[in-house]
Length: 125
Image (tube, rainbow, N blue to C red; front, side, top):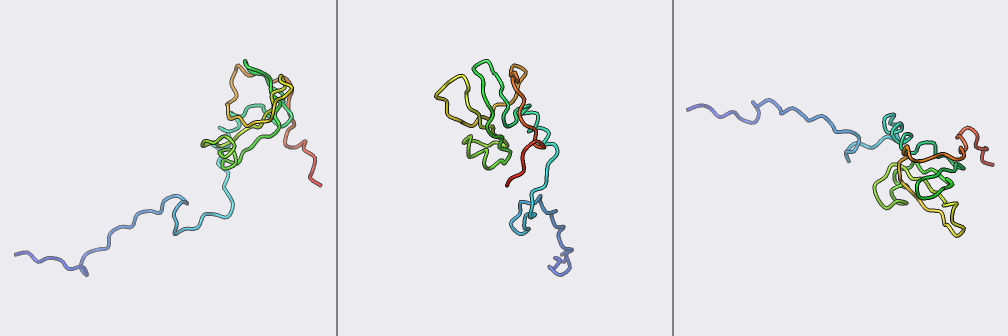
């Protein structure tokens, strides 16, 4: 008969590597790290829509009132999972109310007026 090894004679099992930042035993970093691929993708999807820009689609023309890049806030505004949202107002309708859109910029969209660049914003008082 062969001897059964005891628990003391067995080597310890290898430990799994810790998963990425979303484990409850490891606190998340204080600040969010920028993700260059995500930022580039978001920039491509938003296109030239900046605050103050006016763009035209096949349906109507819109003025950009705000660009939201916070995924939580964008998801709340669009009521779906989203990385960004743009708050626009339809300038072809007199009674138009601002609303959030998550449509990506396409080749059929046309920029009528450029918006402000982030460097041209006035400092907050």
